[in-house]
Image (cartoon, rainbow, N blue to C red):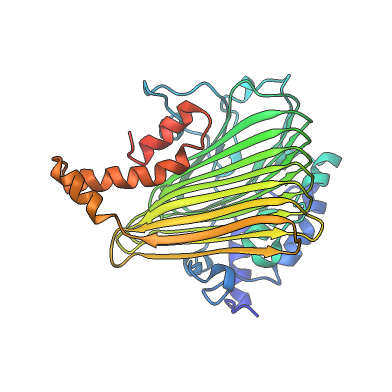
Length: 428
């Protein structure tokens, strides 16, 4: 049994949200109620909980957060994805401010491709009920339950046909002691291709919890890529709950590029419900100061003849903590599965901590599965070689680290986005 914080602490936490201009509407009450009730029986995990043992939630549990609905500012350029000329990339764009919907560039969305992009707090429909919290893993993720009970904004996006350019979702976070709980549900028709980019700007934030839940339903023969660029300031705690559902012959690629910020937890699940699927998970991270970056992934192979690839690489320095826990399930009927899982890390200081636990749970007998993990330091011979060619210690370190995490970034298909991420990591 997991050790927990006292029940009164959860009740106090919920009360602070409910008493702060909560955006809960009567139309959504039927969807929310089961999770509101479940939340009263749950508590924040502690380090004695197996799935949270390396990341501390006590600061969140002790905080009193409020929803803060303000007009979106005009100074969100730091969240834009920039090309080689430092111009904003061409993309369809929507903005959420502290989790709330805004009208910022809302009208530039393509009706022919995105049939419906509905504000999730304002709609109650059969479609929303069908997709909301589908197979949610609440037993291990109280933050997902918290979002289901008290989400304050977001979209139901229905992709009718292939997008000719990315859909860029910008999360602007500001204020102090603020909670933002966006929920975005993406569904696709058959044979659709789309790229979705999530970025965050938090220049004016202090002690803010960004707890987002993203559900992605990938139809037959579709190819959906989601790129998360997590580049926050100190005082921002981010929980990203992503769950993808795949139908036959579909491809999903989920990317996580994490740097800066106080505390980042990515809970990522892929449920492979059809044959002939390809599932890709990529993560690159650099943890500094006392930062905590925690990636937990699950790929659940339920059907035969599928492939999954998982590659996470990063560095930790100062007193930072990095955690990777990846699990691949291969169910009994899921024969002929190829599953690859790798986590590689570099320690850049004696006080940094890296925890890595790749796992396989296989119930089929005709599979090819591998997993591995490495943690080490920079190659001294390579450093010496670069220094002998005139590079400073800082430049030599940067070059080697860049080559190390660059392997992950290379998996971004869009050249402009790849360039932007490489710049953030100091590689270009």
